[in-house]
Length: 455
Image (cartoon, rainbow, N blue to C red; front, side):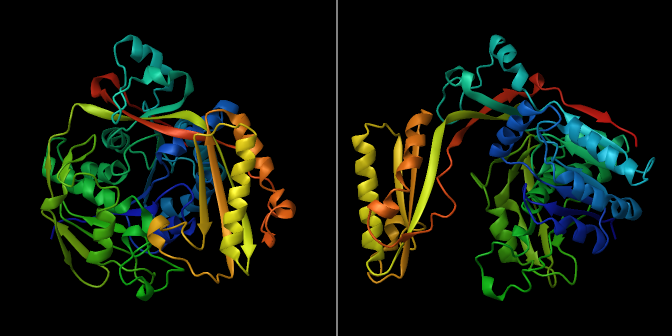
């Protein structure tokens, strides 16, 4: 029987369940633990943090988590791979290295960081070289929003992580790499897959796609028979059991909650899916219509037959920029006539804003408990509702109209319809709106770098 390599998922996003990585390492045999922290908006948040303090810009809760995790990971021979480095992977790596030294693990923890994805400081250089970074949706050149750009990161693939593994690192911290690359890289390394073995690269990419969102593959957030999913208070996170031929089983540790079934796995396969025949990553293109899923036992789904095609010559660039400002405020109205009161309050608020000659791009009103989830599809509400929450959001290019809105909601408590409550948290907060600008850049322009620390 061919060798099995186990890659476990420990985090699906920044803010995921902190006990999952501990459970994955302690709950049974695994070879690798991948932890995915990054989303498009996450990079801009981290960039702001770094602009205020050069030592920041990464997922700070990753470091105390690693302090808990490292002794067990070292003892069990588990390699940790994570993109928690955000826009400052070197600072993150140094912090983890320091934790390892404080734990007395000198010589046992080898931290590597992957950089080269952050091109924020290269934007003007690239523009001068003819790289206009056109928006993939609108076709506009980046110059249209250049003065408002807050972050710019290229999606790297699995290869720099493979390089770090070849250097014998057992903790690898990256910036913006693809979510799938965190799982694909150890499979390439362990099995020696060629970079142009497109079917196996595609299979490893699918494995990474099933791993990247944590318990969403193992019954979390599942819409299929969700009430019967056992012990969601202690969900088992996914584990990929991969073989050299590209086939793999997705499972979880025994004794944990959740469920691994064809239905739950299929739901995750469809997550963030565009054209299923052309799932494009830096490492290759996957045809999701070629795979076969089979229930292979309790909490075990076998995935076979994945086919792939050659990678493109480009990498995707995730750029964020300041779009404007927003604020969202709420009031709750009680029975009787709760909905009628909430609607009247909205009418009064809008009229007051109109009389102030304030300009907004949009004013959006939702009546929570009536139509906030389903909008116009909600149908006719119950006229005798016990309570309705009025939620109003405004958006504007300038900050002043938004600030004034935040001062107009509270007065409704005493000078609007009766029965208002729920304002204990105070005035709504003005927030920046971060918009997303997707672009492409040729792979030859990007130079990933792997740096190895020794602790």
